[in-house]
Image (cartoon, rainbow, N blue to C red):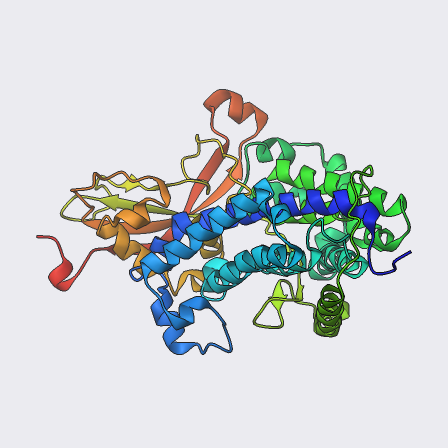
Length: 473
């Protein structure tokens, strides 16, 4: 029996690869539809400005060699096309080396995007997709059975995702130790979903059960991933159920879905057709050599994970090959939202006719119920949540956002749900105000139909208009 391969995991590999291709497709689609306003030449954080000050070795990317908005769009849409092809199974139609190249290309394309994505791509799920996507290159296709070492590395990633998240919670916020964090989390999370209001209104004892179950899933269950079957399948299945619960409770981009994809690689599906050819020598050498490098690179993430000063979502190499993860090490008790408004009046008095811009995902109109967007990632909406926590988070880009709104910039407005101003009549002034939001009670919901109640806190940005030659008459 060949120690190098595990033919019984052929179906697991197939399910894993098709699911991963689906996540890639969503990621590239998000990039293709949002990059121009966020990263383009006239974006809020332009790529050309970034690559001018950051060397290639610190952020390797195709866009370090050449950038234009058209080239970025071409790369993003090419990633969509290739992901769709992989989802359809084109990698099974080519030789083993061809399949590996097919999986390598989307990894290279997405690495290029993430490494110039700046704060818009500074989320753990970006590095997680790259780490998992790189391992997918080594899985090959039906010409050879799945390598045992790669299957082990996939479980190793899943272990670090779950166990690291569990540790950061226990260390980061006392409410996790008291089992009270979920009294607040569903209301204060970055982007609530359509069921988040109902999750928040669950009885508090059930919130305690939720928190305790989370600790068990993240701090105990991960160790069973390395147990023999069917124990490993049971552990992975429990993680999948937990992640689907999180999918129902909020919008966390593809964080939950990529974790589900990882867990699928550990599930022992009923046996299907198995590869009969022996793994070629060159394939064995490549897999073992790369695996040895990845094991060595695991030192710093592990050291971080066991450290009392553990940090979340950090990449320790510019290729994002082995990273550290974690989420919600601390939970906000109060929700703040920045509401951006514009007016066409000549004088920006308080009694002027101010009209609010509506975002797609973040709360705005108290009567508007949250929508489900995940696994699609609304990047500006997520950063607006951070902006409400502290203006420092928005310092590099918020002023430019206001300028683009004053210009009625088409690409920027495309990121929003609704602009209150017609294309040919931009606002004369734009301002931002900070509100405290809370979920309504059952009684308030029945009486008003609003899921949110909000209270004005303070001015976030005073009325601002274009200056100089760009100012409208």
